[in-house]
Image 1 (cartoon, helix red, strand yellow):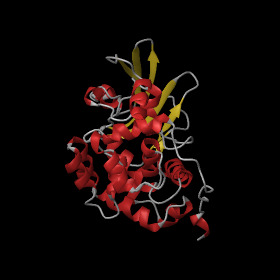
Image 2 (cartoon, one colour):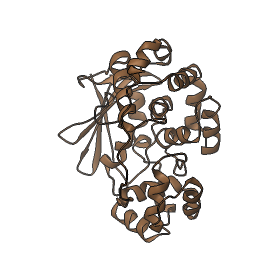
Image 3 (cartoon, rainbow, N blue to C red):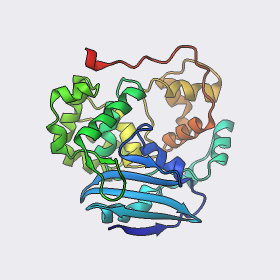
Length: 301
């Protein structure tokens, strides 16, 4: 049996663009895009597993939820969809950013309020290709997650902390996860309660809390807090592509590093993640000069 509620955005709102940051690859067992314009999310809340379905119905967002976590999901629906994100303080300082801002008035930074849900796949994405990380997330949820409540067939809720800790080493290996990343996840789930507290902290405190876990650095903390906390200034550093994209988009120059990227984004202090999102949405990226990295098969190692 489902429960439901509606939420009315206060202005332009892009449901698909705002929710897409929660999807970890096209085969994500915890996220699905329906052919009828619905978005399905299976997650583990403080109250237990829950499945959420959201869709645009005219000027409203209509949501249905199932499972022990249904009430928690609906209570937090506006926040999750970005109701508390305030883009009014954002002032574009570059022509390209201004144009992207004008073309995307419905962009909002979502806030799930759930740290582990974003932290674990971010750890899986450390130092590997997206395809490798998405495959690992998919296989681990399919084998060790649990069926999502409600009518969403083949969707899975990620394991709880104890279930993560019980995954044997050979299962990590089969999923293509090396010992460094699996060990970081195991350390994180042992401190799950303390890490989840970061969802209510400001950016500096939340980032520091996450980075107390060996193996979690600024890149992983930022990628997590962008989703769990909806923090507009959580700029990703240590990324292979982002500095080069930002540098090329704003200056036309190649080879921008983290330091130069941060200098370029200094006029957006307090809103650097939002500025980076808009730059990415502009579509201005440096032409590719090298082939994509090959996907490694850790199972053969």
